[in-house]
Amino acid sequence: MRFYVDFDDCLCETAKSFTEIAKRLFGKEVPYEDVRFFNLQKAFDLTDDEYTELMVEGHKSEILLSYEETPGASRVLNKLIDNGHEVFIITGRPYNTYEQSRKWLDEHGLDRVKLFFLNKYGRDFFISDSSYNLELEDFYKMTFDYAIEDSPMAFKYFNHLPDLKIMVFDRPWNRECEFPNEQYKRCIGWDWIEKEIIC
Image (tube, rainbow, N blue to C red):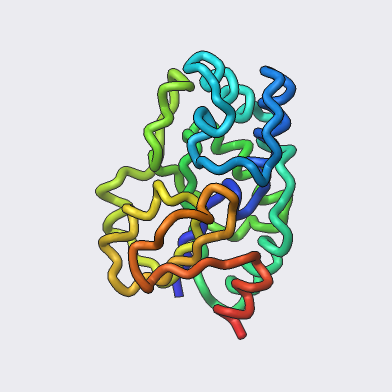
């Protein structure tokens, strides 16, 4: 089987780090459980300039490498690979974070996963030379059996795969969203995913 896996907030605790960055840079104290919007500008009530500063800070090399792994992620993904499945990390990060993103994966035992950068959210404005190595037209030619994703904004990218099973990784910003159809199922962690898929 082929697995699409999102990077931020599925493999690592990105939003938790952004709550700390927002507090440090702007004095915005928003507890992680109160991050009710995937749009962090809205979640932290930031101006356009503040949001740009937040995103630039959060994509610095030392920050990207410091993100904590979501418990169980590397263990379950390596088990899938050991069982003969293919794992594709499809991230919305800009491609100029490739080196740090690849290093993070390798340092967390995920050196066998394939990594692609897809402009899911149109965020290239905050890094002037940003680019992506996977175009939408090429992404739509790819097939997957399962997708693990936290962002409701990414759901539209699954419409071309009628048999895809989408596991929505439980996060504060997706708890109130309505799932498009029965293909979507909320998952509460990697242990849950392991039981659902492997066992």
